[in-house]
Image 1 (tube, helix red, strand yellow):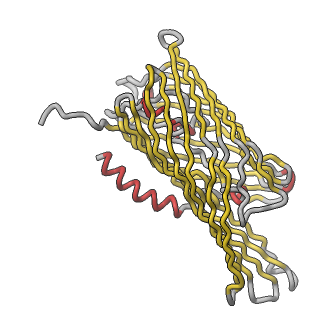
Image 2 (cartoon, one colour; image 1 turned 135 degrees about the horizontal axis):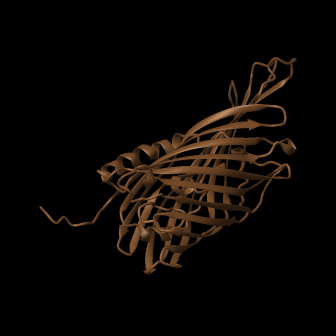
Image 3 (cartoon, rainbow, N blue to C red; image 1 turned 90 degrees about the horizontal axis):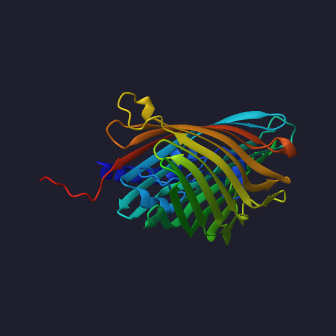
Length: 408
């Protein structure tokens, strides 16, 4: 059953990932777009903390975790996002529904493999400056953008020693970004439209290790290290400028963009299947994202960093008398510098997340729900502040593969 569901979901979501507009942030104009959380809802509900060697939940933030899986795991997730955008004088609201990931993890003894599809960045903005009611010669403009970067990956983890695993994965990045700018002048019946289409592709690699040890009969120490190599992303660009009457100009431009390396370290304390409190810190180098369509004198890129603390609590995962005692309750807090500087102001993202995992009775499968409250940007320096709320839902199905039947 799970195999048929995986095939159907892969076909559907592969199409949806190209079609969706996954953000409404004006900051998605810059670079490769708004960077999404590249992991499961279980980890996102803990602000991204992912230090435990989990046996039934896939953890794509560290490929070493695949070696800890004990059941084949298939998970798919999505988010409904609502945000309030404001500057010093105006406010507006926006909503989006997005696909977040499709992931599969398969245990093979000491070896485990994982693969899947994850949208990694999203471009989605629509800005309008309407002066059509003004005097003759007034300029009206509209700017729109859509698309983003996705990745498919395949990785493997191996248990080299009890409680110590290592892993690696290869990631193929691909995507398409389209931007349109329309300019009209009051009293002139012809408008000018500029369209930029960018196709992106590139390969990078990820290495990780995880280790845990008992401090006493119940308490465990968890540690995690992960390093993503920097890589070159090929960018093929086409710019088309036209009026309502004819095409005026078409330009093609190919260039290389630089995706920086990223280093993440995490640690936590907890009791297996009971509770966990952990923290993680990530540092990323300065990227080279300037493309044919998004250069600006007021924008530069810097090194980014993220600090997170989070955890979970399960009252009693073996309880027969109370379903609510088997629910996993999660929470986390993050503080992040996203690596973008606009008008000399470093853009920050601060958020709180809450979540719950609801077990499917009689199985190791579960349904997860999460909510995230946060703020990105600022109203100072003529910028825009985003106050966002994300509602996320995921389904995680577990089954045993490669097990011989004892009865015919």
